[in-house]
Amino acid sequence: MASVMGEEIKEPQDIIQVYIHLTKKVLPSLAKKKSSDWPVYEDHCFQRIVLDTICEGVWYDHMKRPAYKHLKYEQSKLAADLCEDIINGKANLN
Image (cartoon, rainbow, N blue to C red):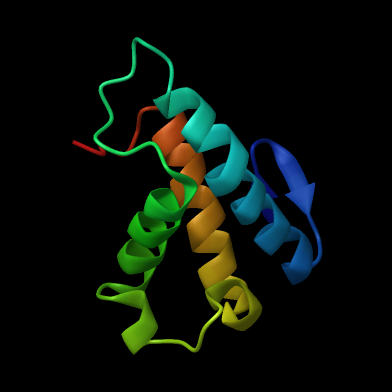
């Protein structure tokens, strides 16, 4: 069982939806706050950073497009966990 943002996630597709929500809504919203010093604020930038990080290289060299349709369970878990770490200040975007 995976746990993301304190919630138990049972289905791989649910973890992917969490990743999509965090990169499309939550992270851009946090980045646009005046107090944020993050160098990016667009959703696709967060998606690229997260995917490149979990793939340990350029994401599209490791999976087909669109990425969210080709994420494996462990990759989706890592992606959601990394988003959570960014939100909680445990991963640095600078």
